[in-house]
Structures are given as C-alpha cells and as structure tokens.
Image 1 (cartoon, helix red, strand yellow):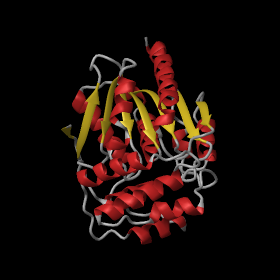
Image 2 (cartoon, one colour):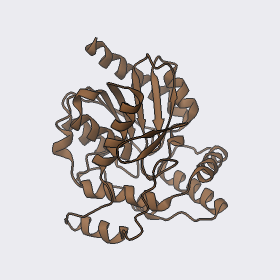
Image 3 (spheres, one colour):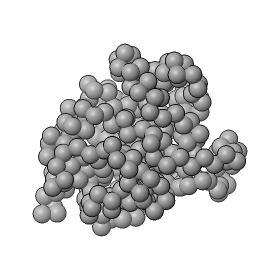
Length: 296
C-alpha cells in the first residue's frame, strides 16, 4: 500500500494489474475502507486486463483524518432534512477531487470509475465535473440524492446511525449484525464477516470520520440535475433487496443519465457478496470493454 499526496488529503491506495492496461478506479462507500473491495475481487477484475486501483477515501482507513472536534453531526443532519443549507467539514466534491488527485499521482489520464453507495455518488460527481478524465461510470447501489427515491427501511436507518462500540470484539459483532440487515436475504458467511471486520478494526477505527462523510452526503442534497449531465457511458447496478438505498434509487439514476444501462440483481442487497462476484465482474468488464471500443 502506498500514499498519494493530493492537494487536500493524503490518500492511501493499492494497485493490481499492469499499468499499461485501462485504469479502473474502485471507490468505496460510507465509512468503508478500501478493504471493502476484497483483494480477490480486485485480482479477478485485474485478470480481465485492467489496471485496478482501490483506495481509502478521506477520513477512513489510512488516508487523512480530519478531526473536526466541534462538528455537530446530529444538528447538521436535522437542518439538512429541514431543507436548510448546512456547513460541513468537506463535500462530495472534495472527495471527488481526492480521487482525481490520486489519478494525477498515478499518471492516469482517463479512468473507468466503479463506485458503490457513497462511492457511487463520488463517481457520479467525478463523471459530471471531469468528463475529459472519465472513460466510463459504473454506479452500484447508489442514488441521485433525490428524497423521492432510494429511501431506507427503518431497520437500515438504525444501522446507519448506530455508533459502533470502541471495544474490538463488540465492534466486530456490531458489524456482523449490520451486514445481516443490509444484505437482504443473502446468506451471510459470518466467519468471513468477522475476519474482515476484525482486519478493518485493527487497521483503522474512526467512526467520527464516517459521520463527517455522512454529513457530506446530506449537504449535497438532490444531485439529479448534476447527474443528468453525465456524458460518459454509464452502467447502473442495484440489488432488488437493498434496504439502505431502495432499488428505486438505482432506477432513477439510470433514468436521468442519458443512455445508461440498468442491471437489477434480484438476490442482491446492499453488499457485494462473493457469490455475486462473477456476475458483477462480468457486467463491469463488458461495460468497460464497450466503452474502450468507442474510445479506440
């Protein structure tokens, strides 16, 4: 793992595959370290002939932590829900700029973006703001920020706002419980989930950073007009069982991006289980290859 010094944050990253292959930037979701992109998943995707980059967003993992001690998350979100404009430590645009800085650091002129959940929102922002740097967009289990779509279930809301325990064992069990809620009816491999949760806890534990990321999402509000300006070839993937961002969020994303292709996976919740990796990698690879063909 290496560190890229970008304009406003140091970004920890790791690469897979050959630098001469088309670059694929994997962007993770709320509070999830780059470990959320499983090493085997990254290797399998790189094996399709891509230069794969996974990284920690700011305020998570080994990237810059912002430590805004006086920021009141509950107050900020309450005001955002009331329709007020809120001041937050940083924005989705700032996080998109971090990803762009990482591309510059690696000498990547154009990249194929693959973002999940909040990572999908960051990828959408990049594609809208920097069309000349984006070869394609794959938005997974994400949304446009419109409150008319993509709303969570009560159980998912509880998971979203529950602060994890600081005790390692308790934090691991809390993570497993959350994954059971978010995964829909997909059978969770609890042993694997505990191992991954333990690895993430040992590497970095920063729940305040997750709160600041959440505030950035709420501050962005409804991004539909912004998303509708995306010109890159777009693939939207969503789970029919997603309890955190209802499938209507994915449908709306695909509706507003010109020419976007929508793939709904019936057995998928708000997760990336190994049982779906082959399907996901097939869809992503085919989309990237089609986009590459238009560039060539």
